[in-house]
Each structure stands twice: as structure tokens, then as C-alpha cells.
Length: 340
Image (tube, rainbow, N blue to C red; front, side, top):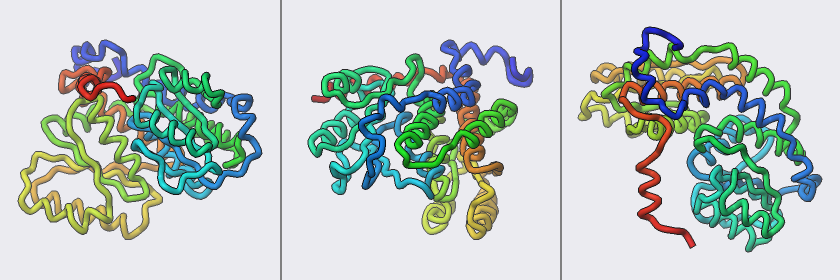
């Protein structure tokens, strides 16, 4: 195993080998980027779009949130995580329907709305109803590789989006940046840090604190802990939490562990806020860990994401939990019934 300080016997809980998917994040980044969708996008190449909407939930939606961080100076992306498109969506827009399974009902609902307004639609999925709709209506479709849990396909989807935006002329070429981040990640071993921090989180409720700029990264940590370790976690934002949540530590119990994710490009006043926040909550008996993420923008994003995936994975094993299935979510969908 990777490190003998982590008991080998715990790995028996990973009987679907979820660990493999975390180890190949850098490969998925590369594979998604080298995918060449140009021939699938011919009807949209050369068009000018008023706005870009990406409709997707859960693991299929988080890529959009991360793209907003990375591409903030190049393209304005609106993430849609609901049944309806924003009221300002029009036929001049590019609307991407992203659902790994192809059966996500919120994404299907947005697809139907996009059809009604005659927008430029692109579907990204691995099969399911959306695949069928694309075939029936001649809607451009990019098929994702099968065999993933949707949340595990994040890196592939993220870099595939980059390639799509390049082909559509929305952003400049990102080959150099993708090569840099894949090379960097291939040489890193985040598992030792994850093993240590997962022990601190045992029997605690994780609170993930980031600045507003990096909200999507803190949210991804939260959802990975939710889905992989099957336990609650929450994320909040600096500076907003200093105006409300901080006061909650006056009368709270100490069954929390706060993780401050800090980045070299955080605004200087927010950096000070993080230090002062840590000072005050530790005075109240709450334990905390600060992790500083370094590198260029894309390296920072995927270093933080990979570390978060590993932490959620090792916390799952410590909780004697299989990180792969999401049984409670599947049971909920059955009780919810079919979407028509």
C-alpha cells in the first residue's frame, strides 16, 4: 500500500477501487483535453454567443463552478442547478446540458426549456435519456466515457469543457497550462497529508472555509466528504462568515474541525481575516487546520481538489465506509418517482 502508517485492513472497504479514480485525476485531465470535439461542434463554430449557460447537478455541475474560477477573465459562465433556465436565457445563447448519467431530471428540464426558446444546445453525457434526445433531435452530443461515478469524472469533464470553449473561439488555447498541471500532479503525493488530516476529522464535523473567490473548491470538498465518507460537512466563506457565522461559536459545542483553504492570490485583507478567525475559534476550543495552496491558477485549483478527494477517501475508510456507492441518494430518487 501507499504508506504503512495507514492500516492495510481499512482498504477492504474500497471494494470498487475508488482509489484508482483519484490516482488518475491527472490522466483524466489530459484525456479530456485531448478529446477533439470539433467535428461535433461544426454548427456552432464561428457563432457569437450572448451568454453561456451550463446546466448540471452534483458531480456534473461542479465543473462549471470551477471553470468560472479559472476562466473568470475570458468567458462569462452561468451555472444552472435547478429545473429552469434563468429568465434572461435566449436563442442567442449557448446552453450546455451536462449530465454524466444522461438521466438527471433537472438537466432534462433545462434541455426542454432550451429547445422551447430555440437556443444553441450542446449535450454532454455518457448515455441515458439525454443521449436519446440528442439522437432524435440532431442536437450536438459529446459522449463521456462510461464506468465512472459522476463525481469521479470531474477532471475529464473540466478539461473537455476547455477544449470545447477553445474550438468555439471563446477562450485562448490552454494546452500549455493543461500540460503544466498534469505534469505537476503526476509528481505529487497528497495521500500522506490526507491520511493525517482524515484522522483529525474522525468523529468531527468538517467545516471548510475559503474566500469567496474559491467557493467552488470549498464546496467540492464538502460534497466529496458527503458522498465518499457519507458524513456531514459544510462550507462557508470569508469575509461573509465574519459578519454572522463567527458569532455562532459563542454557544456551540466543539465537535467541529475547521479547515482553512488559503490561496496565494487571496486578497490581503482576507488573508488577515483568516488568521484572526482562526485565533478566535481556537480560543473557543474548536480545532483547526490551515492548508496553503500554491502554484499557478490551474495548479492551485487541481492541487486543492485532489487533496480534498484524498481526504474524503481516507475519512471514508476510517469510518469503515465504502466510498463508491451513494445508496441514500439512489433510494431518494426511487421514492421521488419518475420525472415526466
